[in-house]
Image 1 (cartoon, rainbow, N blue to C red):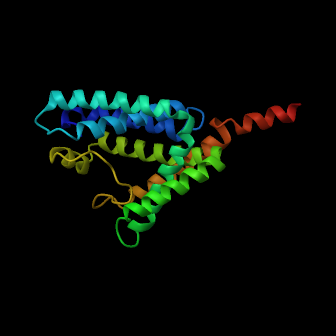
Image 2: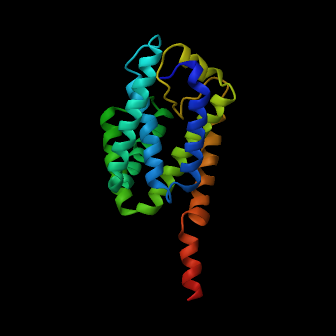
Image 3: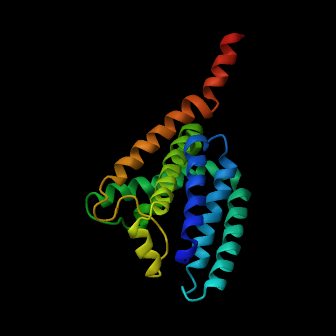
Length: 208
């Protein structure tokens, strides 16, 4: 969690990281992993402290962020599997929330394992899809926070951990998942045909 006074810079960082992941996640995979490792590690560490302990909370966020970033970069050789695991967990959560609420933890674990296995088999495409949709959600949440999303402000004021859930939009924001979907698809297409390097290799091969 972060104090409300730090929400704008945090939202800006989240927005920029989201754009980087969405449009060039495959090419910049290590940087994407480092950025999101920092964000996840920081949020996890700072959530252990109360909102009244601002200085300690910021310190915990920075330390946790550095640790998370280092861990993600050190594990970059299995980064594709991590992306696949995250994508599998997201997919099963999406399916369950549309039917019967949150999935059982074992279901999420199995989906993560399956996603990691598929990612190692279809590395390029799973990485592109995972980073495109993950980045799309990050830039969407960051953009909403910068525009003064009252849901995010209320969550911060209540001392809740700032963890957005794509399939549980705030009242009056049923459009959010559809915008996320559109941005994710756009990011996938951008990476496949522009930033992912595939088209460049095809052109060079044709010239030969």
